[in-house]
Length: 224
Image (cartoon, rainbow, N blue to C red; front, side, top):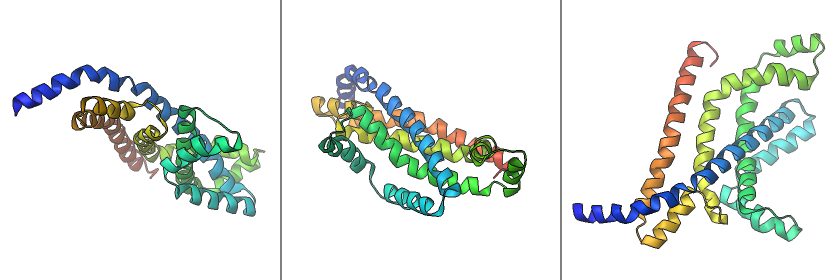
């Protein structure tokens, strides 16, 4: 059995570089998709809270619908569906847009709940010194919301990182895609997939620990 494991590892080791070559695209998808989701999430939460009732209602239902759509379906709509309307994106741009749109619905929900907790008196004080609603949101609400949301926000990035593997469905060569290619070439699916699982774990676990640390720290400070 040891000999079999040794042969498997010797066969797999030359392919480690192939799998790791996809880490750049994994990080690009995760980071840019997450940034896009954060920007959209903040905009949507602002409109939901401060926008006219009818627009707020429309945004609320739009986000409910988006949260009900699987990421892989959104990727197919963007990459395969939009070209029928003359709108074409490369696989990696399609994946970034899909990840950003889907995660923005969850981040909007996260920020909306936290923003509402910000004292109305603080907003009234902002208005009293001449700040507009947007500037009050920008300079007073967002900094406090981010401070409170930070633990959950970091966890959300871990989710996005793992969801980036869905880009495999439209041909983006991230680490999961490369692992599948190696598995098909070697007919050994266990080793490359376990290897990729370890990579995800090594990235996500420290983020989870950081999130837990920040949550405890904010709790002790009375922010949560």
